[in-house]
Length: 107
Image (cartoon, rainbow, N blue to C red; front, side, top):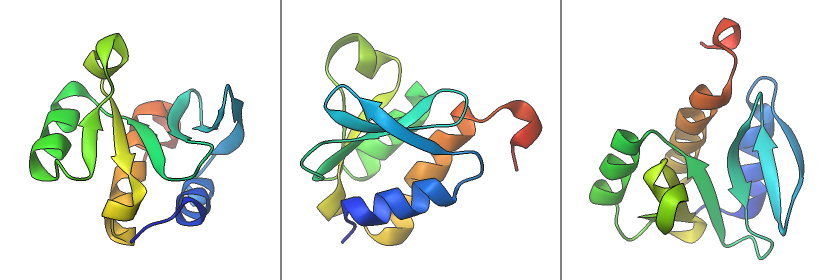
């Protein structure tokens, strides 16, 4: 079971990531925001491609749901942290990070 502390630790270990307030959430960014953490620490939003979003929501509907409206159509996906293992959280963060990192930094 993953936690808000796990998300912060993993996200900040990804090259170039910084964290700053974003409305009522903590936003993790490289060139742009790739994940946000809710103030209560129970959920996080990840920026996936629409195809990745569909895959995640189909594979683990108990853990992942598309954000409602236009943000969801752009790939923003909410995850319930308690439904994720640490490896699943790391994989989701790395997937989202790859969309935000400048091309010269990608691994």
